Length: 394
Image (cartoon, rainbow, N blue to C red; front, side):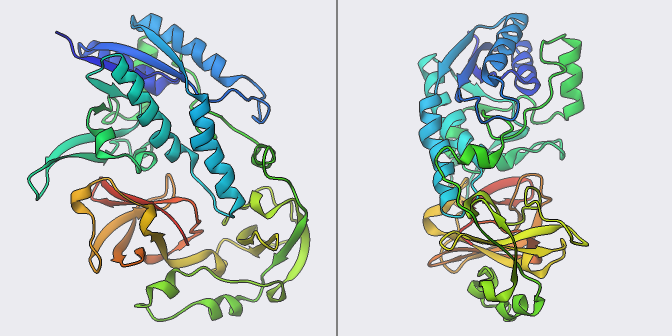
């Protein structure tokens, strides 16, 4: 009897080729299309993207010869992803909705529907791999591995997955490079073969972020203060390499440390390291957001991508924000581990030391990192296996 696989079919080429490969491998393949976002008023195109995606998914399913099931999970998406985004931005943090979407929607709600359909496995079109291993405690664990295509590795987006969620997951294109995926789609004449990859917020698309956030976060004019006194930045820096809290502590600015050069529409709409959308001219080099003060509605900027205010040597993650993909490799208080770390998607892996203290985890980098951003996820790897992650507190 064939094993049943339920695959998330999004209308994109990656999930379509994944479904095709599974069918060719002899599985009983069922596709699941999830409607997660219906509001097109904030997208840059203004189109009802999900309706087009659903139409393409229906065409692909028919071409491959597999049934397509459609579910509406927009209510959970709103409460568990969108509301989370609004809350994080209101606190001056920058969330990663794609990571939350995978944890709360693609591998939570999706799994439930797959179980109702009697699935033996679930599958997605992510560029990552899964293997099983035996831990030092004798138990079997799923290993979440980077995709074989270094330009498309999406393991970072799955950094909050649990062992339960990973247990029965298949990643059919995890060991294939993107050009090969496109070739397979074109050879099979799939309806999505030439569709562009999706961009922007997961299931929402490209948006004008301030317009998106203004649905719940009111705009309020405030000052943009430029920090030109680099000496002040260095006064904030602690030179003791063993003082982890000082190395991780963000720089603190006041309006007296610079001068007002412009106005903004709300500090909650901006993020550390942001360059576009500031509408500030008259500088020899691009300007970047160094910090935001939500309470006083001030954003601080600095000129040049080498401004010292953009770089820090360490970051911190609270205990309740730590997630161990491999529980058997979780650090105990006082333990440390040399790892490769990524603090944003597509960032090359960075050499660092992950250190567990009573209050949480510190990550100390060999080389100072640019734009460490509260609310984003740090993910740490041993070789090409993602073993843990956490929300950056500071």
